Image (cartoon, rainbow, N blue to C red):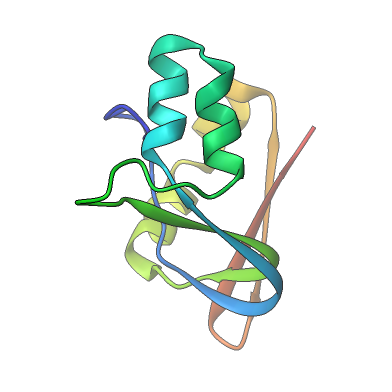
Length: 106
C-alpha cells in the first residue's frame, strides 16, 4: 500500500477508543493508485474482497489511538530538528503514563 517508501516510518499503535471502524481490502487502494479507476475506490469503500482466495484487510478507526513503539518513537524524537527544518512543521510531544503522543502542526 505504501509502495515501499524508504522514508516511511510505520508505528505500532493501540486503539484506546473506537467509536466505529471499517474493514476494507487495501488492494483496491493499490489498484486505484496504479489505474486511477473510480471502480476500485467504490469497491474499496463498499468493503468488497479483492479476490475470493486471499484478502489484505486494513481497519480504519474512528476514535483515538496511542503510539506503542518506543524504539521508533525515540528515533523520531532524534529527528525533531531535521523534520522541523525540512517540512517547516513544529513537532510537539507529551508524555503521559509512559506513552508518547506526537503532533505535527503548521
